[in-house]
Length: 456
Image (cartoon, rainbow, N blue to C red; front, side):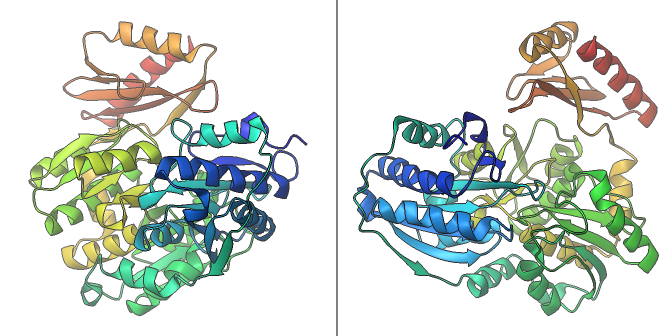
């Protein structure tokens, strides 16, 4: 196996098949290279660095994290090792203790055969393919050579302080005893979020809440329909008020209403924007170009200001800082909070939605019905194309009479419908998201028209 094959360096993390594309040797090299890159970014010697470390419940994670830690120590860094935690807890460690950076050994929502690392600098700002991950790759490929040594590590416990911080986002006393089905996907959500939900006096129906890197029940990716069938059925069967499911490293959560229907990320983003603006009147809310108009419409109605960000957590977190936004949300279930170091969390949205439902009095199904009756969205549809760039230009030319934006791929807006076509970061795919404000039938007709051009 090559030490670090180029394919593992992704747009937002480093990730690959354990034992085939990445192993402990790779992790050690990443640790060493990351220390050097961080030192340059921070204008410090590696011996001055303080770096957070966490790992998820994957079977390979303990050995991978140990080697990554040793790589950092070899370069002279001091490592604060939080052990097995969820990704946002690593962000909390880096942000709250003002560390120089952090590394989270996780493959997020990927199947059990994968391993990986998410890297952040100070303030939990992510390294990405555009900024930092390429430098880590270059360090490894150039040959790491001599290590000065002299680093050290200490084990730290962030569980209680993280939970205390998460609870500051709501009034725990306002939450009513709702009946909630929760699916942890055998990931990190159970130990992270479970004790918080217990404090709120909810009637909880737990599914797969024990961390298990074998993922015996389903893959830890609720965005795939097959992985959410069980919670959707359980919500209906038990008469629950709602369901909440998390991905593997628990930095994203997804909602099921009482009818058993999946709640689209744009509509949840709109609800979270309402919550944010009621606590921060006139604040700025960010959303992505794929989103339903439900988001900017609601923000305007609530007296806030909305803005766009490119898709991807590295772009969102930077834009959140630039715009001093109080909240940002992506269709994919990544929700960002100013008061959580502009980072994404799977805990805070769950708490906020429970609080919002308790205060509003309407059910999640009723709130969703209001959106679904006005905004008709296609969801994301992928198409394999030979030349994504050329195809985007063809689409732009065909719809030149619409208002166009080029923030991420091409966005085309008309009065009563709009769409975004953007390339995948990793595959020869174009991704289409389209919405009609007329009817579901109109959305389907427009969707099929644009798809025919993309695939033609």
